[in-house]
Length: 399
Image (cartoon, rainbow, N blue to C red; front, side):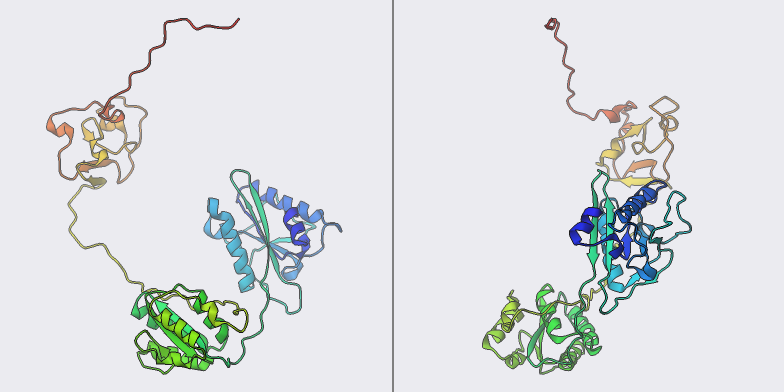
């Protein structure tokens, strides 16, 4: 923890949220919080009186209270949660938290357990909000990361003077129409920048089979064209592979050729269109509208079978496993009961719905007049290795 803070040039009091590993064990949680308490006390000025979180506290939470322990992915889950805390400006409550572990002592520290959801808004002109994430591996490898909120960008301008190419693609025609409608709703809201929208759709989305392109110089023009495409109407700003007249609105011949090549199904370098400097930053836009088609198993009549019986193909390996002349699943039933009371290793209780097996077609060996030994399943047919005999010659030992 101290190493991560020192590398970031921060103090523990600069944090407002700690995403703890949170093992949920009587001793694991106290050990983790005691370690962070020691990190706070090791500050040059001693234990800080307050931290950078809401109400001057350093709030502690753990995603495991919501989704359980993800083992190898638990650290990544905590990292994602910390990012969402900074993004949505809310510290969520720990689910099912009713009281503090009696082995945890937070008195005299700015630490506090997030027992309720807390608003943590961005404050203009103030220091950026910061959160920390702890993750401990089974093998003893420990990790601690410090996150800082992304910088605030200026609001989107009202319009754009340059003519821009805004591409859209989808795997199916219907999905392309829904994507255009969703984009129109977002653009009409007036919260996105046209240049950022164009560059995000050019470089941040995979180009799929069904494609269209809109040439626009403002948000209103983009929204109108996207709405028309979604409704199946023609629009002078819409270009497709067979109707590319809208590409003439682009200023440069190279830009028109590049857009036409993309509409024909090729991959292009959209960065060549941005000749006036670096492309703008990419922004979150509408997600892909998956079709959501259900795929049910084909309806058919299943063969009648007794409760707790699993039907297997005749050539399935488990169909050859028998105890007392009856086909059963290995390690799933009491062999004494199925084997007529003869000892066959430790008794095992039957597992519901998995204790009995029967082949789908061919009869088992017992039904063909061949009675297998109870321990035949341990030695499948095939050559067996004979144990190596010890040499009769005495070994030489050094005195």
